[in-house]
Length: 123
Image (cartoon, rainbow, N blue to C red; front, side, top):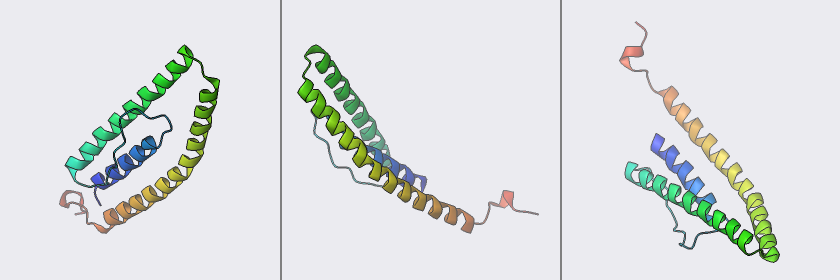
């Protein structure tokens, strides 16, 4: 297992959480695939950062829109959808924690199975 695998897992999880956010930007969400190559991990990091930025902008636009032209029915629908989203994402965090625990246990096992570098071995 490599650090890229761990990073890819974290980025894929973050992107999936952001992709489900109830207030979305106008641009469609692309499906992303988990990968362990450095180029695709860097690409995933950029995609996740872009997704975070676009969701944040969409949320600010929604708040500004509500202030400029209050629509209480839409505001209540938004609140309900965000509450439902928060409840749904709780399970995803649990699944992610389990996956990360498994990855770290594998990494620890791999590390323990290796011999230390020559400079660190006892004389």
